[in-house]
Length: 170
Image (cartoon, rainbow, N blue to C red):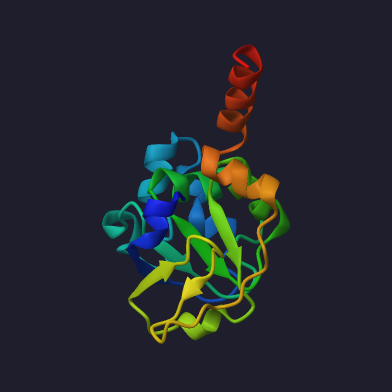
């Protein structure tokens, strides 16, 4: 998520607690490529999501977002669909790592439920905090620099390519 994206207001897709990787990347579609898997993303929880999500939209979820299996496609479909960030109080550990490896920004906000009922969200470019309609910043855990750089680069592999290119052309 770059600073221009953060300055904009994003549509919010609301989800509850314990959204597992099977909901994000359903098992019945796993034998196909990411484009097909993405068409089935969240189909049992938010049937319109895969059809209507737009690049820059934000997912706001409850506790334990991305629990379940280690399938990286669960994060990859959100990247493929253009989701700018996920805001939740906590994440499944494997999903957390897969998300950043694939360039998806996760914001860990213990009070994410304060975003319930909002239709749009702006994320402060400097603090990476959601901005409430009152202008108040919603406190989130700081994103470690190395993870933020990874997300901004588009994931681990693009980040490594940038590093290699920089070493070849100092």
